[in-house]
Length: 137
Image 1 (spheres, rainbow, N blue to C red):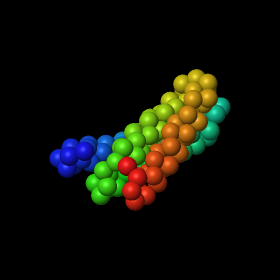
Image 2 (spheres, rainbow, N blue to C red):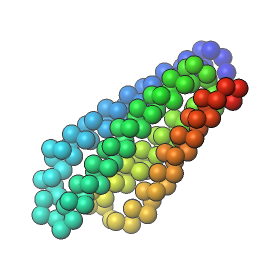
Image 3 (cartoon, rainbow, N blue to C red):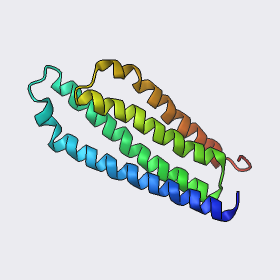
């Protein structure tokens, strides 16, 4: 990979991290201030609130993980670092996204998809670890 290509990719991953972080904070704030009025009176209101909180927690943590992977990519451009970011984005979208959706009243069967997002997050961490090993590309 050329240096310019690596720099462009790194910048994209940092922008992705920033966008995920922004969305995590915005959705976390909604969960703290607006969600309760939407779920108020629902028999499973406390469970739905916990789903939202779990989604927001993992969302924000993995927005930061994307930034870490971008930093690793900047130091040592590799497919593994790029794979880490991609896995984190997919993982956040699926894991947090299904929890957010269920908290807003989507069908509970989406909970069967949530673990696939978790697997993607774990794959992201493994990819990040591989990217950090000297000599691995």
